[in-house]
Image (cartoon, rainbow, N blue to C red; front, top):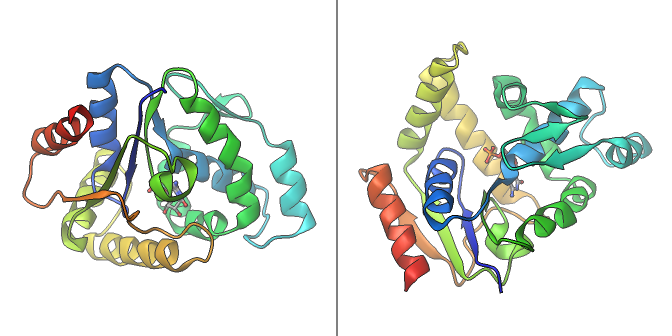
Length: 215
Ligand code: C5P
């Protein structure tokens, strides 16, 4: 059985940083499922297709080409790593991600990735829906302020204009949307271990996750 490590949690809890390091240390691929939802949101938003289940949405989801390679996610054959991490996509992604049509489009794609070499995957429903049999399930959290601070610094590094207060409000809004949707809401799986990352270094959190994997 290939090793699957599922990491869920709210925005900015440090999931992707930790998941990448854990994957590197274990020598298994890393899967950023948020990037898949972001790529679909980018595609649909650019075409003016609103986040409601309708024929136009259905056709677009049938047509769109989305590929996962070792290093990047290709939308219509193009690396969209930068375009999917803008404030615009931050704002619209949750509405698209709440739609069962959108989630279904990504289900097999995600599961397929783990079949050969296993993986470390991060998202909102890794442990609850996509990989319910994962060997290790982690729910990463941090205070709202800490998560907003991290996202704010990240945006500044990318030269995106942002105010801390707006980032904080937006992160709260996105978590509200992700937790309250009826399909695959953000929640800790009953058998997941909750880790708060407040005041811990990335190294400490990564170490804790690796210890759980090696238990
Ligand atoms: O992890 P990231 O912040 O990039 O995720 C962007 C958005 O994609 C989340 O706010 C959520 O709406 C959606 N998402 C999801 N399920 C996942 C991963 C992400 O609904 N497994």
